Amino acid sequence: MTSSWVSWMLSFVVLLLLFLVGYIMQNSVRLLVTGKRAQGIVVGMDSSSRFTSEPGKPTLVSPLVEFSTPEGEAIRVSGRLYSSTPYLQLGDQVKIAYSRSNPKNAQFLLWKEFPLVPAGFVLGFSILIIFLWIAGILVTRDSTLDDPLRLLPAIISHLRLNPFRFPVLSILSLAIPSCVVGTYWTYKIASDLRDNGIKAIGHVTGTERSYSRSNDGTTGSGLFPMIAFEDKTGMSHTIRRSLAKPLSRLVAGDEVEVIYLANNPDQGRVNTWDEFWPSPLFFGFMGIAFFVMLCLVLNGYLKD
Image (cartoon, rainbow, N blue to C red; front, side, top):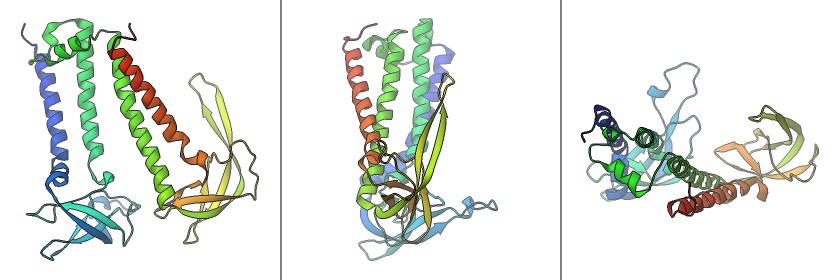
């Protein structure tokens, strides 16, 4: 049975998207694998007119890092991520991977400097197309929709997919990576604050009631303390929606210990256990639960 023009078109789109993912990541991955390592130091900030052409917009900058090659040549390179709030400060040290033949082609060895967001978006879109393609094959049972290499029918047969089993596996395959990312992200925020945070004394200035609407139309509310503190430069910041001491009643004038990062004091938190660890524990628990469920489904313990 020959494949239809639809399957050929979908195959071309998926291959094009996968090629685009490789193109986006190829330079960063090549430098990570084969590049020479060096230790650099932030010596300034680089701004680009490409990001500051609109009047009234804040200037976007990227750290300017200097490092030396084994030959003693001093090289200055800027990061690939431009933002209004620099994520590195003057004097910070950064590990760099650079090309031996072209030292100015360098990659900061920091997660945020890798093009994971655009590559992940394109990869996710290609996976979505494949999922919809498999769903179309399962619903229509039209063999002309099979891909030219017959890879999708082999996957359907191996996983014993059907219109009921496929949505369960699809949801779990998306939920597990989401929980892993959520665990990593919330744990990284908590550990960064614990390891690099600056402590200060905050004062409760009052309370603020927050409202939210649920799916069934009901409205819920919560009362949160507003905690003001000053960073080391003397600038004042306010923490809202804090979960500090949720079983006690903080009143205006109470003192609490606050911790914040020097480059992002607006995201400061009250320095208590319940402000840091419930989120990573929740995402971690849900990830393990979804993974166990996936194993049960694949091994036939949870049937249709």
